[in-house]
Length: 307
Ligand SMILES: Cc1cc2nc3c(=O)[nH]c(=O)nc-3n(C[C@H](O)[C@H](O)[C@H](O)COP(=O)(O)OP(=O)(O)OC[C@H]3O[C@@H](n4cnc5c(N)ncnc54)[C@H](O)[C@@H]3O)c2cc1C
Figure 1 (cartoon, rainbow, N blue to C red):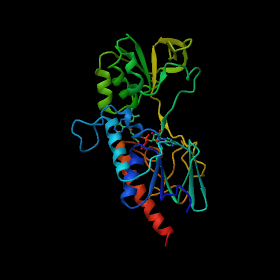
Figure 2: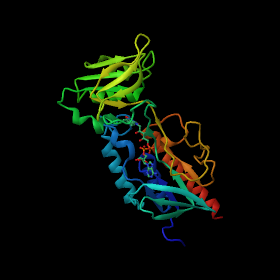
Figure 3: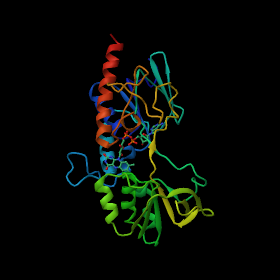
Figure 4: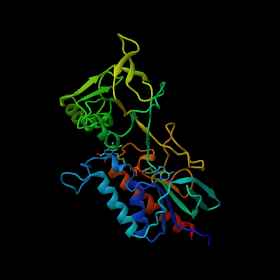
């Protein structure tokens, strides 16, 4: 038996990966889980309000840390390293982590979530452009800052509301005619003092020397208008990053992994769970459900393989 041989290899320590680890271990599989953030994107959720069992909500970071401890307690192994490459050789998957350590397993679950998208406009990588209000908003507290949020969906609404705790003036910039966020969120944003909403406004670039100090926008009436801002928070969508996947699993045109009813990808033994999967709801509870199902179906696959 090869060194570092496991039954199940899991990529991602978010709710999908951690639940898969808990289920996998409890079903008798030996699991290795790659990732460097216990809880994955959960740390970005200030208060997780829509998960049953927590009246009044639970901070996402706390939920993530507890699930991580639980998975460790079940015996899953966490190298605390991201996976650099996942390949397949005969009936084994081989994972190489960032420390060049090799791991082997006959089944694998990709649960590596999604990453924020940016805008394809000049200077979109400038300092002062952020993707997480909870992570990068607090330093603006007490600085009389003007912060902008770009986007019109629920994520943009959440970012604007969170930032309103740190800055007196928030500008929500959206290219569409109407905000496309949930009704409850839209009302909360519209009612909040200090949030200005600019619709039909297209961001075409950013300006500033080392750090951005303005957003260049175009509207029907005016082109290349400058909106001064001390920081910009992008909320223009999320997509998968599957650079580490060196296996030709089928994906949607947007890059999400296609799965069958048993969450198996087009590659036998390779499963996908959570936000990275071609699914219509991307939430903590659906990620957990995916993790539970993927681990259970991975065991079925393993048992069939061994008969
Ligand atoms: C700001 C914000 C607020 C949200 N609010 C809510 C809410 O209130 N309620 C709710 O239900 N949902 C909410 N969500 C959505 C929820 O966070 C996601 O649906 C959920 O975290 C998806 O879980 P996941 O396990 O699929 O992926 P993730 O939580 O994204 O975890 C995947 C992990 O895998 C890691 N990873 C990526 N590539 C690799 C690699 N090569 N090797 C190892 N690890 C890798 C990533 O870094 C990440 O840590 C929110 C999301 C955001 C961003």
